[in-house]
Amino acid sequence: MAAHPRTSAIAGLTLVAAVTAGCSGSTSHSGSATTTPSPSASSAGGGAGRAAAPTESNPPGDIPDNQVYVAYRPTGGSFTGFTVKVPEGWARTAQGSTTAFTDKLNTIRITATSAAKAPTVGSVTNTVVPQLRSQVAKFAAPKVAEVNRHAGRVVRLTYQGDSARDPVTGKVVRDAFERYAFYRSGHEVDLTLSGPVNADNVDPWRIVSDSFTWR
Image 1 (tube, rainbow, N blue to C red):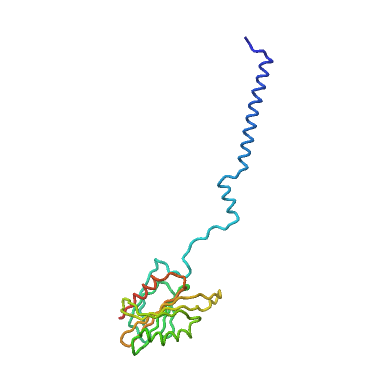
Image 2 (image 1 turned 90 degrees about the vertical axis):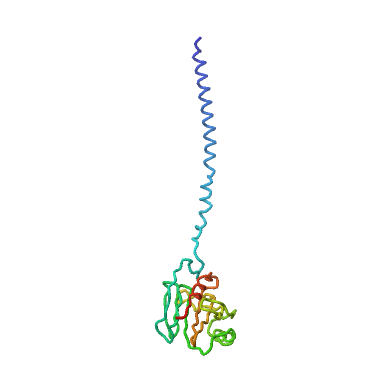
């Protein structure tokens, strides 16, 4: 039996209303979701007020682990009978019997002199320390001891002091010093290694001081 036209029309309107209501509810739910930031959006917004994390770098004065060393053999001055390794590429300057190698905040200073006797812990303590105290700004914490290096027993003096003021930045750096006194047959060579107190240069300074040899 065929459905009455009026009945079919009412059924059709009811179906349309149901579909419309369902779509309306879905739209409302979807709209609510779009107003809540996604995790990625929330992260981006939270970081908008902060600078990017800085790139890591070695502390000031740290000598790189892959630093290359080259042999330095003096060719002038009163005494040339020794060799010592220094970092490749460091700037070299010479004044009298002293030669210095410098890079950024680190310095290697080599001084050759004549000496009637070999230096001792007592002579360095009683003579060298007072001299440095009057020469080095805010000289402090001197420690003198005999240590072994490849060249033999040597006297090592460690201390701290202020660097010279940087002519460009005006900054003064607190430096740590290691001074080795090598001696043979009336000749003394003083090897002084210096850099910022916070720099980890134990291994580089050991390489340099162990490389000293007499010729």
